[in-house]
Length: 167
Image 1 (cartoon, helix red, strand yellow):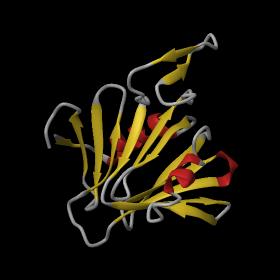
Image 2 (spheres, helix red, strand yellow):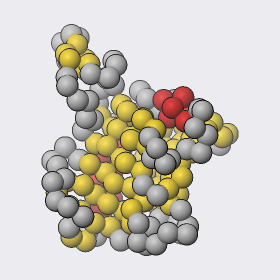
Image 3 (cartoon, helix red, strand yellow):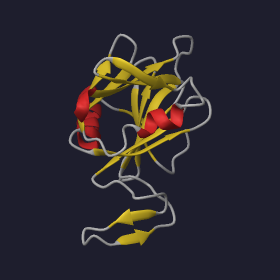
């Protein structure tokens, strides 16, 4: 694992998010969210649409870029109106699915908290804030197509490691 510069992290986030579709939004335990970005939305888990219009069954759906939230709270707004968040376990799947198929237009660090904001078409926004009471924990991880994991810690450290490398 090694430190990375803010410029390097910004470059990776640009490549992962800007102009890409949200292709996966899977809430998990403990307010986690797996948020995938790519160029094509899967028709259903296990199937992907090919460029010729046919579908192909795949054993594991892995988007080219995947955010994994950690030790943080996330929520979604549309036109500055609250849609839902990670704390409502009855609706977090429905809330997260509102982003699927929508193109991301930009992102920004929320530097005072080391959170992240991703803007989408249709005035949809996803925001992530780390839990304030924890220090040195991951806010999010971003897996890229080259097997690199990009990590933002809630103390502002930015790291990278290979996917098969232990923490």
